[in-house]
Length: 195
Image (tube, rainbow, N blue to C red):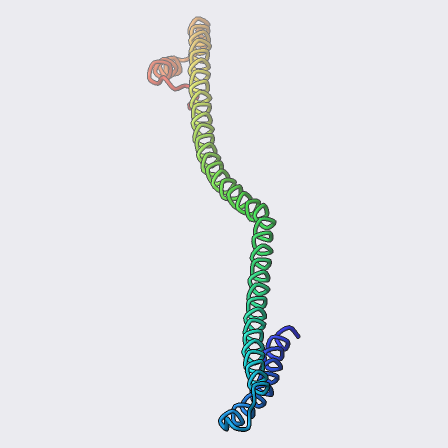
């Protein structure tokens, strides 16, 4: 609507100016014949010229005014649009900052989780090897205790056998062969439990 006015107003002013120009040219043609004009007609001609120039200047000024008004209106709209863009940027900036903070937080959380996983894996391997060492030590201690127990039983068995051998020899009921066999058995082997 405003654009149409910008075009229509100057055209109307120019059209009115053209009508006045036609009248002016008619008077100018009559002026070329100096005998037909009198002073009054010349004065009217001067008035018409001045009026035509005035109207032309007014039309030019109105046109420039309309163009300037449209330019100012356009600049105002651009400034308002720019202000709206700046306002929306200001409103969106906290959300952008929040999104960047979340992204940074999740990145740190990821690295922290990865480090925790590496530490956990290292602790698990250390605990597993420690537990294995403890089990091996326990088994070694049990083996040594078992060997001590076997050695103790062996000694007890030797003592019992020596006591029985002495009793059997002292009783005199054994034959000479049985006595030799018992002596050989008692003196020949340390591992009496196996026999």
